[in-house]
Image (tube, rainbow, N blue to C red; front, top):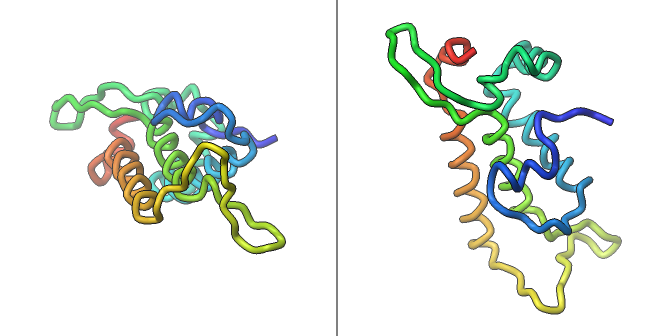
Amino acid sequence: MQQYLITTDEVSALSREISAHLDHEKIETYIRESENIDIKSALGDDLFLDVKENHDKYLLLLDGGTYETKCRKKKIFAGLRVALAYYAYARIVKNGDGNVSRFGFVNKEGEYSRHTEFKEKMMAYDDACNVAERVCALPQGMWHAAL
């Protein structure tokens, strides 16, 4: 079993609340996609691999906190785990109720629920992605200052 930077339960705890009844395997798929697409591209391959292998070395980067720039300015950083949770949450919002079946891509219908319109889904997805991008945004070249 592959280890990710966050658990399926942390997606809800670190971002926005999601149902406890979601399939954990599906959530792991979105965590994996978010790590490999969003976080890895922000860090670069070498740093990403080192962070995954040496969690204890990168606690500030992962969990957030304050750091000081070369110009002695204090900065606050929320942490990569929060950003990863929001990226995964965004993917859950966008894709969460759809499944590929022998009848094509279908949405499950619940007895007491209604499906959101595609526009509403995309607005929620865009909002969660914007939060994730702002949470993990450090000025160019500042990743190593936060380490």
